[in-house]
Amino acid sequence: MSRPLDLRCYFVTGQPAEEVPRIAALAAAGGAGVIQVRSKPIEESALESLACAVADAVAKANPATRVLIDDNVHLATRLMPTHRIHGVHIGQDDMDPRAARALLGPDAIIGLTTGTLDLVQEANEYAGVIDYIGAGPFRPTPTKDSGRAPIGLDGYPALVEASRLPVVAIGDVHASDAADLAATGVAGVAIVRGFMRAEDPRAMAAGIAADFDRVAAGGAL
Image 1 (tube, rainbow, N blue to C red):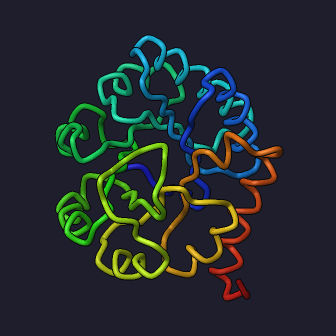
Image 2: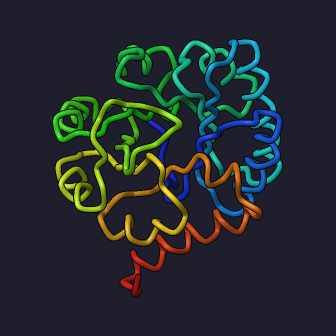
Image 3: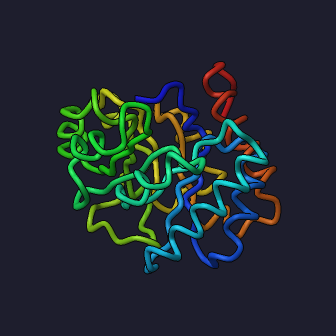
């Protein structure tokens, strides 16, 4: 598995797709550690083109930023040898994490969606296979209906304590939530609409990372 992985600021792409490479590059320049290319519904050929454009833009802006593809393990497997794609994020209904690891190889980054204590505990079975888990929704979100109840600030400490893997909070997370969520013990926050609508994605990413650093250093929220 790939190490180390900076999860503090995690950008999940949204619409409009034509704006994604530009916004991704700015977020990476500001310190976003992971960018997940997600655009639904989308044909695989369009997802491939988008992922390659994002990977190229991000590599120029910040080579340390990791680019993942949402759900499509086979596409990631095909692109990783020739493009700066670093892995996948898979959901509960996608490919089994062990099968994904077998296809992607030992250096790929693999994330898995969770959001309840039971799902976190089940994810622990893959602690030697995956790199992190996403846990959400933090709030109800219009971008993805998981069918799970919102976790809220009070719900994350128990998930973090139960998990053998780093936890990333997702689900209508705003940049202004970063410090409060960092204080719950999560490794990072994943943001969709906030980045897509941001006037300055670079400054937004830098601020999120700084909030996590300040909380880790024992600073005030």
